[in-house]
Length: 233
Image (cartoon, rainbow, N blue to C red; front, side, top):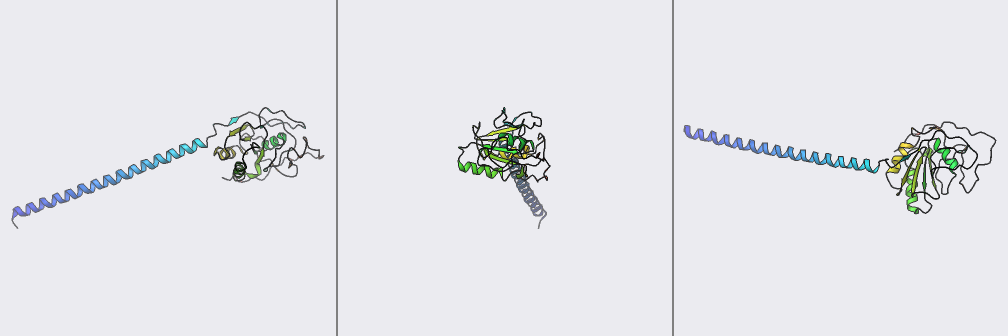
């Protein structure tokens, strides 16, 4: 092989290697560029999802009121809010449970003082929505601190109330409802967090079954602390 041919061969090989390196760099840039674009898109999608989730579960619509621990009274109370969220109440609290008929405000407010969330709904709410509401109520938060009942003259199809806080909802499946339960059940404004919401002193009857105040038992209700239940999701 002459010197000229050898030189030409070396130059040809150098050009081939240079072309291969150029293609490799281009492929790498394309790969990283595509990967980077995918990452940007994923970050954007996740960001939009988180923003939307924050919006749909936002509790900005909650109305808050200032109530100190309420005084016990043996009379019907004229509450400012409907349903009430605090104030004077009966000496006996309502057993935390799901009721198919209205319950006395005065017993329910005492339960709120103990940390309960009271979910009320219009009596004409379709059965499927009532069932959906009960499902949320029985699968969210602390079941020992949950009241559910219909309520006459309700200002919205569904109203969730805790001591000093209230949320009006149009749809029982609104994700704001479980968010409200998790935040305000035995929340920071509860006067007696952890006080029992059941037991032998609790009222288990509905408003049509027993007058207010209930017949005296001769004993003072014992407002003991219940074992702290685990907050469920």
